[in-house]
Amino acid sequence: MKNKILFILLLSVIQVVIFNSNAAFAQKLKSTDVPSDVVQTLDEQYSYVKVTGWVKEGNTYVASIKDGSTTGKVYISAAGEWINTLFTVPVNELPSAVTDYVKANYPDFVISVSALEEKENENTHYYLEVKPDGVGMKASVLTFSSTGQNQLISRTDPEGFKDPTVKQPDKIEQAKAAAAEKQAEKAAAAKREAEEKAAAEKAAKEAAKNNPKTTTTPAKPATTASKPATATNKPAATASSKPEEPKKEAKPKKEKPEPVVKDEHGNIAIKANTVPDVVTKSLVKKVLHPEELNWFLVDSVYIARCLNQGKKTAVYITPNGVWEKTLTIMPEESVTGLMSKHLNDFYPGWRFKNAVKEQRSDKDDKMMVEFYEKANYKNKLVTTVFFDKSGKLIRTIDPDYELGTNDKKESAEDDALNKYYEKMNMQLDNDDASSVPDNVKAAFNLKYPKVVNVEWKEDGYMNYIAAFYTTRGKEFCVFNSYGEIVETWVLGKNENLSATIQDYLKKEYKNYKLKEFYTVKRLADKLTAYKVVIVDKKTQEEQELWFNLSGKPIEY
Image (cartoon, rainbow, N blue to C red; front, side, top):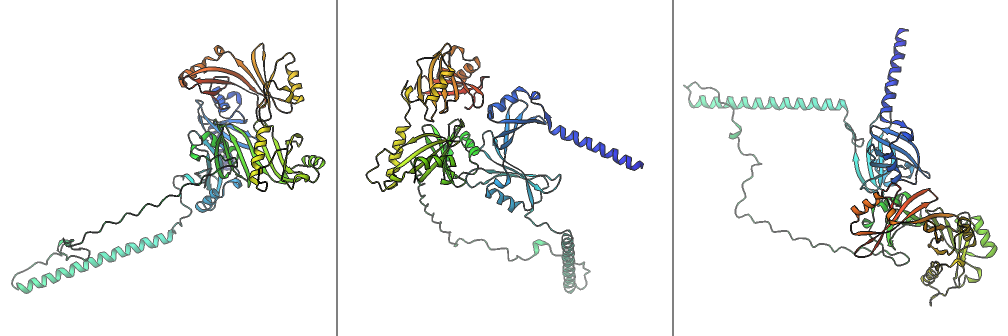
């Protein structure tokens, strides 16, 4: 009974030690216990994510985050420096090249950690930890590129790692091999001793024969120097040896020029290594496994064209890495019931041609459906209808454009259609309120009942911008097509720009001068920031910079 009590006490002590040990490595924190520098760093890096918890591992603060259905962990030092971020990737969504490597090099191991890792000055890559199945086993750390062929970047195995692909020798077989080696050494030593003894006896007999009266001592065994030359002692090369003829250098093969890749508008693809890392990282968040990826730079926006889950996709990203929108070619099955009802009611006998789904950063998603009306099918005249994400009609583009001379060629049709789209998507002239939807104007009048002399513009994304003056000065208000406010901009006085931002501009942009700045409020994510416009003193070229309320540079 006494032993049983002692055992229970010992078990309790062990549990307490283990608990305290784990707490030392991962201490759960309240959000109020996290230093402000750490919180601010997280906000600068990932302002759009939801923070679900904090822990402290040693001197590192770890934030658990969630971005839609994606979860991850952000590691920040106590000094407020971002270390890295791991976005969880399900094992069944890893590229086959990665899982094939693990299966071939770590058979019977399990993948305990599977993630996309972001680090300063490094391309986003896959991060894996693999280990033998069992408690307390040490893991190997592997990293793979997240683009191209998903090549292995690094592999770090723990101390004492035994390669599972190499067959480990059996202990009994090792003992047998050691005994056989020892026996062979003994036999070789006995043979050498017998040969030396025989040589000594022979030398003694010859000496006795030549000098019968002289007492002789046995001759010592011959030394290594007296041994005849072996077959390995080759004679030196003679002067008559012919010198080797110099080998003819092989003619370098002519490298084939890289094929020129163009999109449907004639834009030429740029090299992947010219795309900023921040843009590449933004793409990885939107398209996990892009195939047949090509990059284009159009009007200062990077466009990644690729196949995503078998669908043609185009992702639009700003040079600062801010995702703008994604266009995806969709099958006819993507036309929802509400959309089909509208088409069947107003265009009986219509034939599907194409559909494009547009996902936008402002959540104002759309679907464009191209089809042939029954009367226009023979001439291949295309009607285009835009729906919102709920399937409600936004607008219709009728086929009143003229085709090219050769109406049998699809390229002529597409070219004419593109020109027609360009015409339809022109910006509105200033103060052209007649082209602004009534619900948008009503929403503006409700928000600003005393404002007159409003100038309206469309931003190309079916948003309507109202420019006007109030007691605060010049303001802008951006509405979507539903009459909802997306953003508000207020022009500030240059002398009121914060000293922190002014000091930053003096240090980092010596050849620029301040033109203007705005206080911008984005309602969707409740973000407030400063947009600062600066001008190069020599070239007069303008540049936009964004800062948070603390005056630190951010990506917007």
